[in-house]
Amino acid sequence: MPDQQIVKSTHLRTSASQTSRLGRWLPSHYSHLNHWLKTTIETAERKAAPFHPVIKEFQAMIESDPVMYMYFTQMFQQQPAFPPPPNSGDVKLQNYRQMLVVINHVLTTAPEFNTTGMVGFPINAILDFPMITPAGLAAFLAPKVNAMFRKVLKVWTQFLDSEDSRYVLNTSSSGWLSPEALDAIHMDEFIHQPNKPFFGFKSWNDFFIREFKPGMRPVAEPANTKAIANACEAAPYAISTNVKESDTFWIKSQPYSLQQMLDGKHVQEFIGGTVYQAFLSAESYHRWHSPVSGTIQSIHQVEGTYYAEAAAEGFDPAGPNNSQGYIAHVATRALIFIEADDPAIGLVCLMPIGMAEVSSCIVTVREHQKVRKGDQIGYFQFGGSTHCLVFRNGVISQFAVGAVPQGPNGSNSVNLNVNALLAIAK
Figure 1 (cartoon, rainbow, N blue to C red):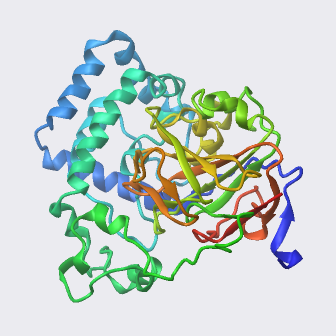
Figure 2 (figure 1 turned 180 degrees about the vertical axis):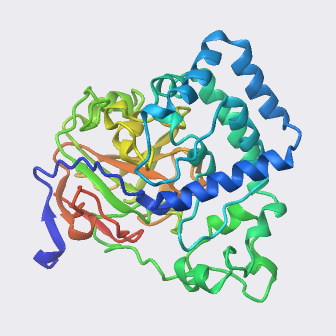
């Protein structure tokens, strides 16, 4: 391998802290987000649709529990302490009742394409300010609240799985089949049927998890067991070496803490090892592939948080993007443990992490199944998010240049192709 294609993994401790909207799930400029929020609030209130049963349940959960009622009242009252940048328009929800009205509206909508700033996380956009208030930080960690959001997001997923969600697959300026959108998502690289209605997609989610055409993402050095492939089409966020069993992951540097990340599973195997984290963009490919050839040893689903973020980050206009290290420990996620055929690599953990609305980690392999490097093993529904690969101590010799965070704050904006070379094992 040419020397310029690899870098040593030693001392690559990166903690990305920035205010850019990583992955373009929310608009980069406040004016666009505020316009969307203002329009959405007005549309939802004008529509005045009856509450869906799950929203009625959400309201009852808030109003029947004095602690929840306090949190959901105070999180909106505390918003003025977290102002947006000057001249941003300062559009904020006024109270939890208005929040419920808007979420009720969102349950029958699908994300639209927008050249100036797509709102791919509409509920995240609604909660952007209350999330970081003291009351919000407490509420969105509560199991009761996350169980409720799990129900809400399941209802929205049902809509996004339906034919009704295809209304955004059109050729208008806000449609995903417009020339601008097709160029942005590189549709020519994906399997589609341009002569059929909606390009042959059955739903928004079917469109969102579209597959690459054969040969578009070749597997890196398929015969070389030391060559580890990239598991997701994603931009590098952080690399951490010598990871501890337990650490204070809630501080601003957000170090990785294996006991919490892995939910207590196989922790001893990875002490002193390496964590690689990368985030998926809104327009990219959202399936995961095996980084090595081996056997699926075990699969574990963790029902965690959806809208929690790190208090140490303060107000994050991209919330919870700047908390990606933190949410690797607390968010809804899947743990897929793969025993590599190469004993020098041994056990590897792929951890797709749900972030905000992106909460359905769909695993398409089963325990004890043999996989080849580059085989699909699952996908996010709806969308993409962030993911980690965890390696044992002493496994990684070199990371590919494209896998190393290079930006001014430690993270890349350019995706590393899925199945491309990620690293070389010793």
